[in-house]
Image 1 (cartoon, rainbow, N blue to C red):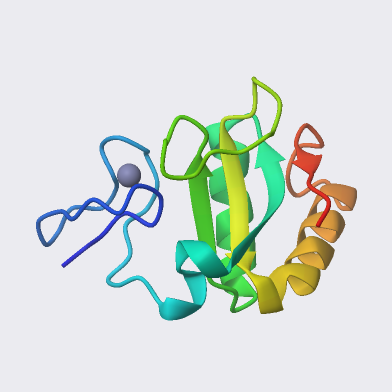
Image 2: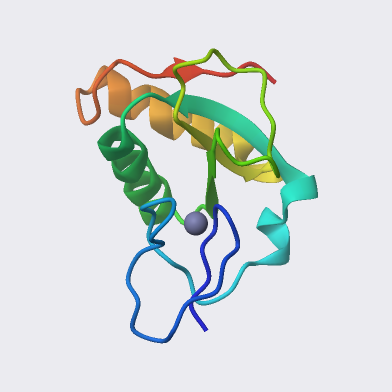
Length: 118
Ligand SMILES: [Zn+2]
């Protein structure tokens, strides 16, 4: 059953995106990306940037969570205007930061997000 990686709502088979978070649904949530085990690595202010980064990270074989800042499940200390927090498993955090850094440097995604320190 498709499930939203951000808010964890379940949807009917065939649903492509979460209606609340506007993120792509996944078939299952891996233990590696359970909330307790992830690290916030990047704050995005634009949905499109978040989506693009998720695509890029998944192409690198990383499991990615996007936390909506409005979600009470995942309170963050990021600035008020941050809309989407990219999070990955702790063991993947360094790799994910490298991928994002190079994507921004190469102009693949806009340079309008914010790298979060560990
Ligand atoms: Zn959702």
